[in-house]
Image 1 (tube, rainbow, N blue to C red):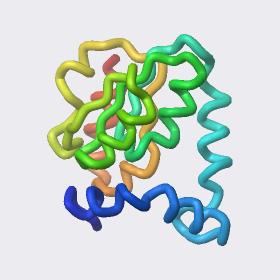
Image 2 (image 1 turned 90 degrees about the vertical axis):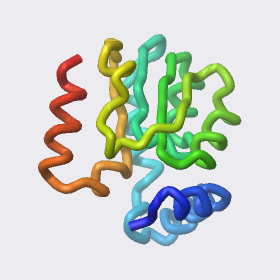
Image 3 (image 1 turned 135 degrees about the vertical axis):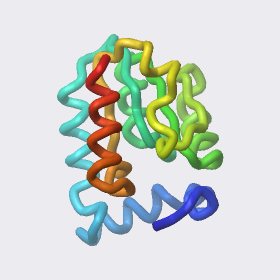
Image 4 (image 1 turned 60 degrees about the horizontal axis):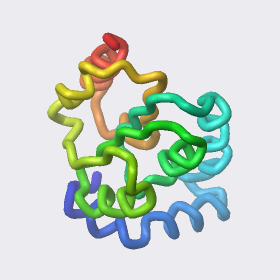
Length: 137
């Protein structure tokens, strides 16, 4: 598994990697565009969205462009910088999810929480704790 430095390094060519893997139907990004489209169809505009593990902002940008208020975080500073560049009016910040959901976000009511390609980095018990914390909203 990549650490923060690995994801920082990957940030520069992450979208190209995803695109190439998807177009050749390779794991783990086979069907990536369909997945993002399905998520976006399930979220209407004018919603308050939390995107956990924003990466370079591929999903969050679509939600942002659909007039949603986007709050997002990632543990990679370079991924955060790429996402901020795409969405200057979104609240995007660096946070390591191994520390749990940020306290500030636990006190906000979100209409939807997205978390793509992140939870597989956690063991089952950690996933349960994270999801339970998200459901307390």
